[in-house]
Length: 168
Image (tube, rainbow, N blue to C red; front, side, top):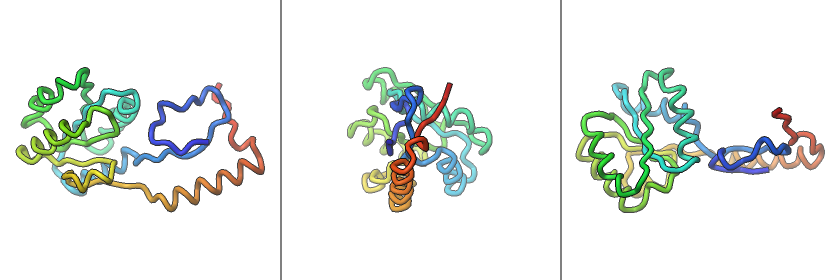
């Protein structure tokens, strides 16, 4: 019965799984980009992990519905971060920071500086980064998530079958 950020680690195939994902749907991020920057066309992100890749796969499947081109770049080695960043000059309108280990303090600072110098909208679904210099972020309503999670827990206690998923 998880409340989790990363869907990739949950083993649905094992059954008896239910809960909520504590991530901002990519659709909300796309809509907010269009609100902040209506002329934005290209959004980029870097990832290294399976969790980061999961999020980018969804974005790559639905970006066209929002008139956007989402580019996810797998940065194989952290040493390549700055080089990959330089390739984005004049090629992206916005950059989204997703939950991924590639965003070390050093990489975040380089990214923030690069975006400022190149007029690239920098945003995230990690609200604590606004204090560190990103343009904006979206956050969950954790009060609402807590109520939903508590209600689901009560339902599962009363009827464990509510948490059994047959995915075969």
